[in-house]
Length: 355
Ligand code: PEP
Ligand code: MN
Image 1 (tube, rainbow, N blue to C red):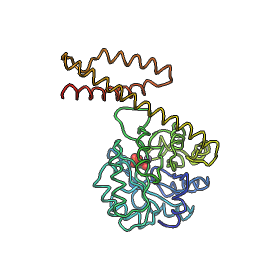
Image 2: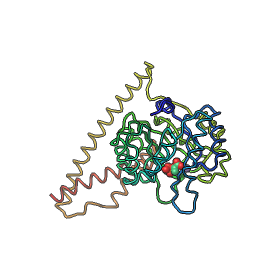
Image 3: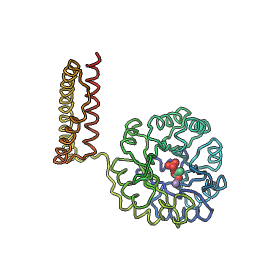
Image 4: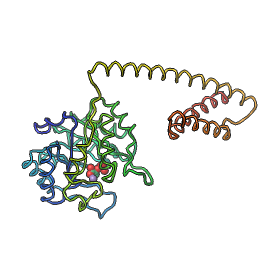
């Protein structure tokens, strides 16, 4: 990667900001100047080609916007990043010395497109961030990363921008935090950036989503910011003015995953030991529970009774909710937990009855 971006690539937290779309040269230059003035932004972003769900919406200014961004870089000294979805986008972006590229959520879903972008990147020494696919499929996300690595892209990072779901939730794209956490496990050490703007779809929740990502030890944040955000040609509702971005960043509480502080380390080790012990006991108990389920299966088999008896299951759940409430366990968790246990129990009985 080039000198400018390499100074930023390993910076923690990495802050990426800029408009959803480049619209006019003035808008790009003014936004860039005001973002640079904050002293808190590491990389300037802007969409040049916008994948819109429906035709007729603003589909991006196209290649001429790259010149505006290059100009913004010259004036502010900020490295720039744009979204690429085709081989032509990659070629154009590289021609204008774009310092970092990202692959959008609508591209990650399509292995043909990711491969096309990857092939165009062969031999280019530019870092690439890949957003999660719009649907919650970690294999697609993983496959995208592997395609980039296969063609020799050395510096790959991930952007978590949430997942589409049917019907309205409070989020534009549900964060499903367990999914980026799993990716962090799969690709240890690979930068993971949160994009609160596309998760939230509004300004009000940006702060809390950004904080959540920090608490989960993400490596950086990408937030859309633009002068006069209400008049943006795309994603107006979620963009904030550069000065509001500063307020958001200043209010964040940064925690680190590790510390050498002795007292803390010992206390943590002891608590973790207790957790390990309890997890071990839970497993033993679950094993015992399944053994009993096997026995019930035998009885049911001998007496020709169905495995599932709805009344009995409701009874178990009601009891569990009441007890969970006293113990500070949410109804949502109890439901998931008992569903999993129940399913395993049914599988055990199924094996017994059909063996
Ligand atoms: C964007 O970053 O402006 C964008 C189009 O995001 P996504 O690919 O996450 O929808
Ligand atoms: Mn956007």
